[in-house]
Picture 1 (cartoon, rainbow, N blue to C red):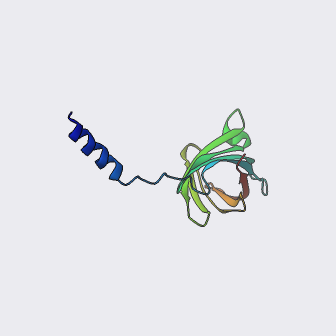
Picture 2 (cartoon, helix red, strand yellow):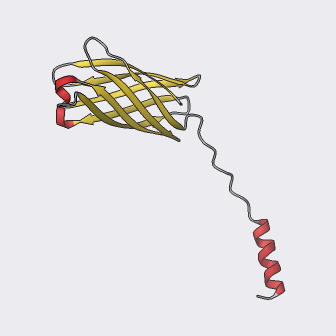
Length: 133
């Protein structure tokens, strides 16, 4: 390359706009918490990963005989997180005819919401709380 070509390439590169760095969203990261027992319904833990507008994770619930020998069920969920911190997620567990939703909101560094689990026989409402470690 000639000196003139090198100079032209350097000037062109210097004049290109730089892309802004992508910052983490205000809710991004790992979240851990609990799922409360309500009226004989299962209790356990929740883990969530938030990245931008997406949330995914697992509920680990102690469900007795409905969850096999271990007595624990794990449900994977996915959903969305709005700019205001509102969370809307759902899961399905066809093996046991279960499905459900989790709705809540992140405020002041903590998530608080309600997990609704539905079977063919009944519906359970659980309180869910989580924070970033």
